[in-house]
Length: 310
Image (cartoon, rainbow, N blue to C red; front, side, top):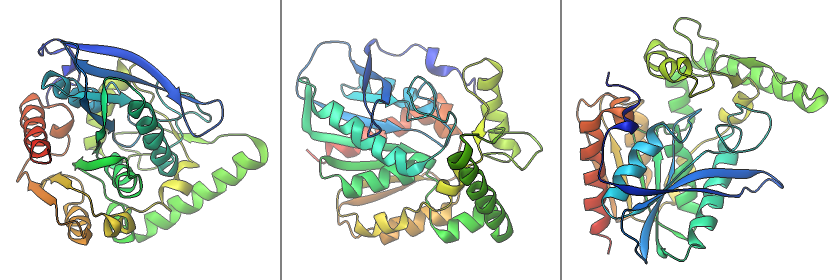
């Protein structure tokens, strides 16, 4: 595992602009970092980036945004509602339906900027963000193309592979009870976001613990998960969006990324005649988050593919 804070690794100078823009929820603002090439430019193509489940923008989204800006693109890494610098209550609430709305809000924002070419807005999703970005790309006509990598693609079969039938039913029931409690009383039940041994957490398993707890230990990520999230998370799916997808699409995955069969199933479901599957062999899932060698070659692959669309 590489140092998780590789965002401090020197990369060709870029500009970073702190930005905020409204979400679909009244009064709730989203906050992001707009990464731009070092030299001022106009008519820039732009990537809107959403990260993994429970992500904050300083993690994998920033790694990709910095590299894309160094190659001459604009890239927006932003916090979705309920985490990081963005607003929204309750905190640490994972709602993929709202994340799709937040992507649309981010597209609204970048499309309004004078230096952006609004005909070249690209959606980039990482891990769980892939299933949300896939739906946004399928449904929002302003997004010209989609790229998703190391995706957690969501359908019933994939969720059972992830949680087992029993685990899925238990988490869904627990989440629905917690959501009903919140709606009746305003009280929020929480568990840890990750834990090394406890499976009753947002993202169970040692391999996610090994990655996320470093951020938590440094105070850079909140290790907390609203139990009511499961009522929304486990009723969300992306396979129907894949079946609607007619735009150019690049899906990057590997045998050692999460649920490879679900990734292939989603790719095969896409009717797009301009889709490409880039299979990374043995690349580990979390190496797509922070391994400089993997990040560099993945961004190079994305840039090369996007160049073919012009």
